[in-house]
Length: 289
Image (cartoon, rainbow, N blue to C red; front, top):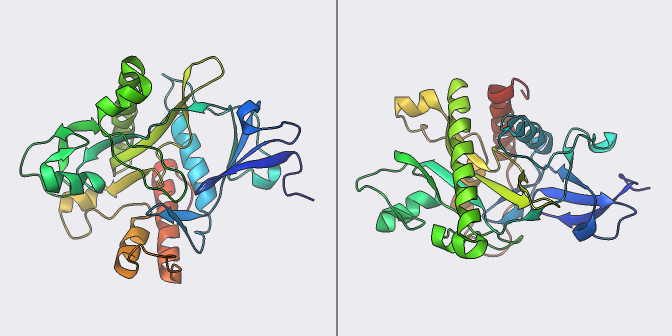
């Protein structure tokens, strides 16, 4: 007997598995979706081994918590409870026609944004002031979109004009403005928790009526970079340590040339990552540790 006898697996992503009702024929015509967050972890666009215990439930709780804090646009969550077998790591969601853009907002200069700035003082075609260092706050948050890559492919930063070509000028401006508003509101909430939201990415889609809707996950440690505000202010060597899988990226950079299959993560890296996710959840919403 299937773990989920009333649902059929329709799509498996890097982290999430998407199911449709068993009696329905395809994801394109599904009346609802069951989105299950696994404990899988990916970095550099590959799925790694082993899993991070408890990661899926933590992602689900954090994303649901954030989704409930923005009432100025709809999200994909339905009121229906997921099956008991996956109740801690799944949501029942309305199907969306997802926009082909990762909506990234950066408030600090780090990651791929820092690499691009170091080369030419721009991020996604946006000129920035000279003399910025890695981890510095930007004069104001910037919208730095990216393509949405399939499993095994790489996301690529694109300019806002490229987004306009993909979505049209009006819709491109709308998702940019909504993304910036969500980031600013979330940054204020995070600061109340002693955290800095360095950057984040979100996704939007259109529902059956064509309404722009927030989908996928929101402000999780898989999609965002959080720093401890006190450590950042102190300016020490750990000021950019983040509550996410950065420790995995760092370890992989030192132990894998990104050719062939990645090495298995050692137990101490798995445990440290697990603790980071749990600590972030505890800091944000009071559970997880």
